[in-house]
Length: 350
Image 1 (cartoon, rainbow, N blue to C red):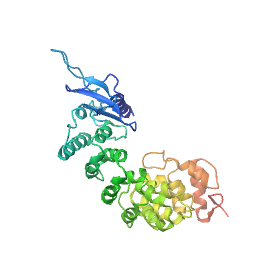
Image 2: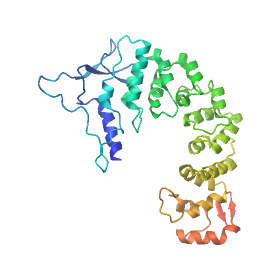
Image 3: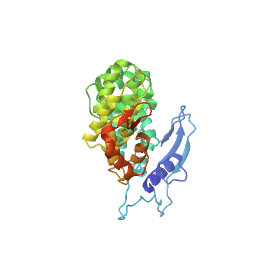
Image 4: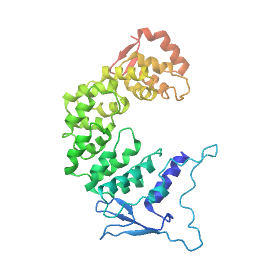
């Protein structure tokens, strides 16, 4: 928590530019475009109301002073510098005037290289504003550097979502099958209908990772013809929990048996997070193995390998009240006779 707070502090300090000394000898300006987005640059566009936030020309014989806060340290005293953007390095990266396409690519690559060792990536980080500086005419460069599996790809995706217009739609859709992170742009721009063939083809019989935005785009189609593909991915896909959250309220979709198989698959593959997330809803379908899992986790202390809300689920879905030991004893004695009541969502004795 301490490291996260320090990280946010570092990002806020740069974005608000309150008394933050910067490295280098160039003037740095802060300005907003006509859509309200904040930019930092050494040469603001003509005609904008830019505010100079630093002019680093230290007096002769004097040190310019510190340029960044002391990084947080772990218990062994080792510095942890990867929780927030490297401000000093980023401020040395400047987009050349009248940059050619090659210069643009070099500029973007430098930003991403400076970002690749971070552990947290936020839309409010300065890298987004720096990438927006390349302008709509260079959206193709940002598309090219977006790579699935690279968390720092969130920066170009965020920049594209702010720069892209209808004219960029064909390029985004063509890249979508290989660069699934771009589904965030499709969702924000409401291009889901046009992206339909790419979305369905990319989901069909696929069990790897799909961003939640991909699933949400398919959900927005509200087409029962897509339900089979959504159910398959819920059962077998990488992120069952976000898929279930996105599709559970689709009109006319029956998920009981699909959810049970998804829960079984998560448990079998040792995915504790998804198992825990899906357990309560799976119990509500009357699936006794899920109730067995709940009872087995009673009194285990709620550790990383247990079900933290086991007691609450047991009391809600068993026709018996007591402490953990009493519930386990009652369940063991009566498990073979329990009948699920679909009206009360409880396992009851006849």
